[in-house]
Length: 150
Image (tube, rainbow, N blue to C red; front, top):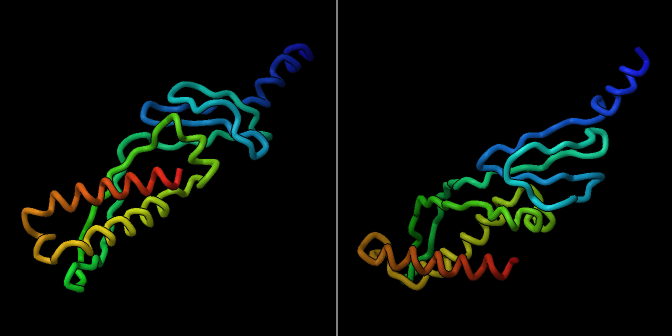
């Protein structure tokens, strides 16, 4: 009986986490990230010393309502969706630099990029055929700003 109990002690000190498809996870032991991010499967860890940090790699949608400046100095209210996803290979770097709460950083970078670009256009252009040009310019500016943050 004692031998059976001794055999089960390691199992009592071990816990498993399942990384589902569409997620990425990494083991955090005593505050330090260990190993490479895992995309799906089972991760075994000691629940007293470690935990598994995970997030979705699927496309996420951030909804914003912004007052954007125009070239003539007017303020144009815009409802905007930002579609983004986490690159699995950069998840460890993202957690190290920004922690699990990275959406405010994306929002701040987008606000800056959209204000810079919209200030170059007239208010009427934001609701006309130039809208796709504005979207492309914001995307390009935001990509540059995000690379600068890396």
